[in-house]
Image 1 (spheres, rainbow, N blue to C red):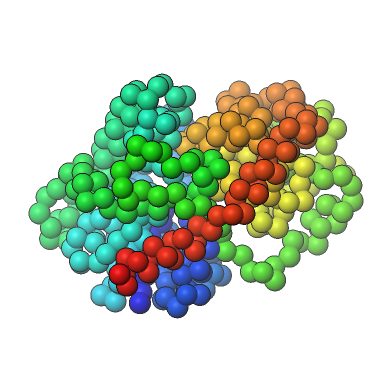
Image 2: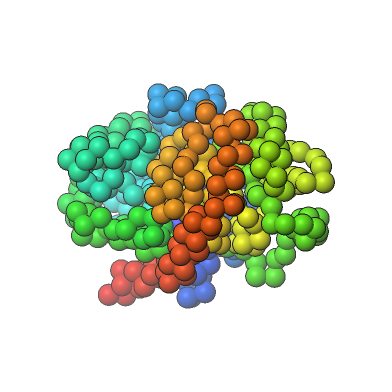
Length: 404
């Protein structure tokens, strides 16, 4: 049986599916990952077939305001949709669709008759429990949370409008708007599995049937892989350091962020590791080391704390390692996850990216590392995550869908 996983976005939007795909492959399925070309090595390292999706995942224009994000997202989705029809071959038996690809994948499933299942990294269904994750707003009360959740879905429909029209035309399907298609899926209780921990987001009681929270899908890495020797030497040379990294965020801000990070670390009396990422963080010194990409699962348990952008994957990795965090959210769903970490007690209060200074970061680092409450909360969350197996639950759902 052939399964196609379709995912698009930044590394954090794609890497978790390599672990999910590897679990499905071990169970005997043929698995392909469809993503943009940047992620071909991730797929192949996990033993998955790779299918190329067209689109440039880099942030265009560098804006983080809502209008700029809407324009960037619409351009990305339109480009993505142009080649989406080529993703599925006649041998595909099941489509697993991410948050980003589902509004396109539904039309492929309709045209080909291929069953599909949602595999989301963010909660998108309206609920009274919290406001929509993309708005970055605090809870407004149950009624207002649900209302803004429905509004956020309508805004997402607008982002997909042009891409959906073009895709349906190419697939020779009758016209149907994104909102019409979404409503049909909701009425049919289309199943969606959410790959995050109930420690961060328990399943809302007002969600419709078919929506489940199963636990994280962890990025695949080779069990034989080891940290680079230079990093191992640094880790062994003194007290546990703090990692500072912004993932795929903050491109072009590297010099400013590097200076802030080093000043904050030294002000707090801590050793540090800067992870270059898209921002290009870099620094030299006996008390600081610059690194590239390394598996979170190997590095994070060796740290005193993690300063990060609040992405879903990095937030979960810090919890899994039982390490306190200092979240510095930049945009999109990052403020949501940052607040969730803080509410657990596993992180300090978020520092908005635009408000980041060396002084604020040093103060937060002092709290995260020297106040045991954050470490204890992170350790409790780690124990909770250890009881969950998102990949195995997804495998069970795939078996029910295809064999039941």
